[in-house]
Amino acid sequence: MTEFLSSKPLFKMNPIQISNMRQKTSILDKSISKGKGEINMNCFALMFSELVQYCQGKAHTVNELQTRLSDLGQEVGMKLIDLHFLREKNSKREIKLLNMLLFIKSTFWKSFFGREADKLEHSNDDDSTYYIIEKEPLVNKFISVPKDKGNLNCAVFVGGIIEGILNSSGFYSFAQLGLKFKHSINNTEKIDSTALNFNAKVTAHWHKGTTYMVKFEDHVITRDKQMDEHEELGFSAFGLRNLYNRYPTAMVP
Image: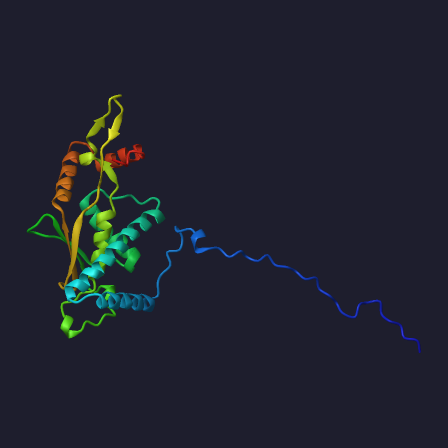
């Protein structure tokens, strides 16, 4: 018998397809305005616990430990306020003291801790003192304070964050509320600028849970009262912000 070989190939070869491989992007190439991802609670607790132990290893007293935690919190606060305005393009910088405190109590606390702070109170005895009250600070949730350090409150770290935000949240303003101008020889206007920050000292105390006492410097209170007076005269905070936008190149003294 004669065998006939089939004209069909014995093996069917599929063409090799080379997929378009994604180029690896560096973390520096990613947009900082995206990715407000949440952090796992256990990871945060571990990281903060290590931070406390690190500060404890360099401190000899409770006061020194709290000072170190507060200083680190201030550095975090300065970066967080810049990150907020970078991400939230339509967000405005507050120039009134009470509005700034409400921003911290609500907007900042929500973005950082997932909820608002419990209360914001004003001292009856001192115009320059405010209180932000938080019954159960997240940073104290997994911290066990030894008996020999009974007055230690690790929430001073959050107090430092608040202080960092207040001390670096301002923009350059016109000297003394933006009403004074320096005139050069050729009669051109030049703005005498000073930073419009809310300089304050923030401390954490065991009261109603944890109370952050915000003590503003005298010039901040004086400036805020002057703003109220100028608003009564028709020079509103909105007008000051418009003037700031009008002179973007006049931010250097």
